[in-house]
Image (cartoon, rainbow, N blue to C red; front, side):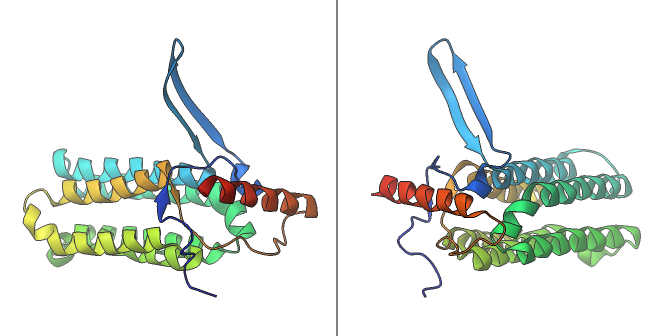
Amino acid sequence: MPLFNSAEPIIRRKQHALDFQDRQGLLLLKLQISNKTLFNNIYTRIDQVFVVWSLITAIIFFTAQFAPIDWITQAAFWSILTGIGTIGMTFLTHFWVKVERLRWVLYAWIVLMLGGVAITDLAIYYRSGTILMHLCHLWLWLSAMGYFCTGWGLRSRAFMISGLVHLIGIVVLPVFIGWQFLATGLVMSANLLMFAETQWDMRLPIDNYSLLTEEQQEFNRKQYLIRQSESV
């Protein structure tokens, strides 16, 4: 079996023929004025996680770049936001990752995020200049590792490429002297929003979803056939 499903586009517009596990907690956002639709999109719980983390990332890094707040206060602020994001991520994804047998990917992200907060807080508390000067590098690296784990678990080229983008961001950070927090926030937030607004490639459906009934699995098979016909 190939590592990646090359028959699937890396990124494409969202498809609405979703599997049972993707339809749980589904949100539909529609902006319409008179008879003209300005915005119309669906957001699975996975998409919602991307949006939440995008907002959290933007708030943290833009605050670090522009707000005249001391490091100790910012560290407390960052820790609270990251904790909220981690709890929200766990709540929103727990059913999907169990069905898709990807709980280890969720655990990897939890370890990476909480580990990053711990390192950041300790560096600020003990005034470690070396780590403080490389906080953006640290978080880009942690995000890259998370995307690589996700890409491997989902067999997704899109997430693998995103991991590479974050590593490239580390290399080019010195170009943005004085604006590294802004640049880091833009890279991380833009990647997250891109995943929330598009449909990314992943492995073929699992043959047997142990947590789903036979009716639900049959529903998934029909949805997969619809998606395949829409891709032609």
